[in-house]
Length: 331
Ligand SMILES: NC(=O)c1ccc[n+]([C@@H]2O[C@H](COP(=O)([O-])OP(=O)(O)OC[C@H]3O[C@@H](n4cnc5c(N)ncnc54)[C@H](O)[C@@H]3O)[C@@H](O)[C@H]2O)c1
Image (cartoon, rainbow, N blue to C red; front, side, top):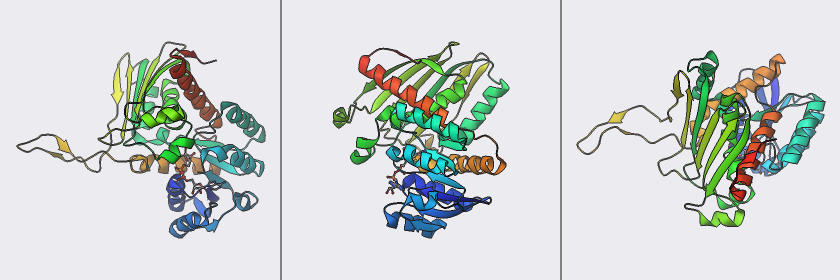
C-alpha cells in the first residue's frame, strides 16, 4: 500500500482524494488545508486525518506520496520540500507561472532523483489516449496536423482570474501539453492572437477570453489550438489529427447517447458533460492509477516536470506573440 496525503482540499483536491480512496493499492492517510474545515470535509468523505499544516505531512516518514492540489504559487515550494523529504509527488499544473522558477525547480527535482509527475490529466482521457495509441500504430500514416478545440462553458470567478496567470498559462497550458504529446515533437515557433469578445474587464489583467494559437515543429508538423472562456452550449473538448493516410477525431461526451426527433427538431441531444470534473472523471481516475502504479513499481512517471516547463514555455511564447503581434521562436 502507498500511503498518500492530499495537499489542498479545494476543487481538484476533492477529485484526487476520491480517486485515492477508491484505489486498491493506495490509502488516503491525510488531507491538508490551512482552512481546516475544507480538509475536514474531504477527510470525512474519503478518509484520512484532517490537518492544516503541510509540514506535518512532509515530515511524516510514514507518508510515501503527496498530491499537490494547492494554488499555483505554492507548487514549487511544496514540491521541493516534499522531494527533499523523499516523497513521491503528483503536482497539479502549472508548475509555476514563472518559467525561470519552474526550470530551477525542474533542475532541483532532477538532482533529488524523486518521482515527480505533473497533472496533465487529459493525456489519460480514454479517447485522447486512443488517438495517441493509433497514431503510434501508424493508423493514419505520417502525422501532418493536430487541431485542438478547447472551450470552457463560462468565465471563471474574477478572484480566480486575478491570480490565474492568464488564459495561456492557466487554461491553454493543457492544450499545449496535448499538442506536444500528440505531435511527438516540440514546436519551434508559436503565433497567437487574443481577443476580448465578451469580457472587457480582462483588459485590466492583460488577459483575453478568446484565443487562437498556431504552431509548427522543425519537421513541419502543424498544430492549431482554438480556445474560448465561454461556450454557451457547454464544455467543448475535441481533438482532430490529420495524416498522410487519414484522420482521427474524438467527440464530446454526454450523459447518454439518445437523439430525439420531433416535428420541430431533429438530432436533439442532452447537453455536453460540464465541466472538467464531469468530463474528465475517467482521466483523473486513470491519471491517479498511473501515478500509484509507477510509484509502486519504481517505473518512470508518464508526465514529468520537464513536460510542465515545456508547456509553460509555449504559453509564455503565445502571450508574447499576442502582445507583439508576431511569431515567437522557441529556443
Ligand atoms: N488538472 C486540472 O484539470 C485542474 C483543474 C483545476 C485546478 N487545477 C490546478 O489545481 C490547483 C488548485 O486549483 P483549485 O481549483 O482546486 O483551487 P481551489 O481554490 O478550489 O483549492 C485550493 C485549496 O488549497 C488550499 N491551500 C492554499 N494554500 C495551501 C497550502 N500551502 N497547503 C495546503 N492547502 C493549501 C486552499 O485553502 C484551498 O482550499 C491550481 O494550481 C490549478 O491550476 C488543475
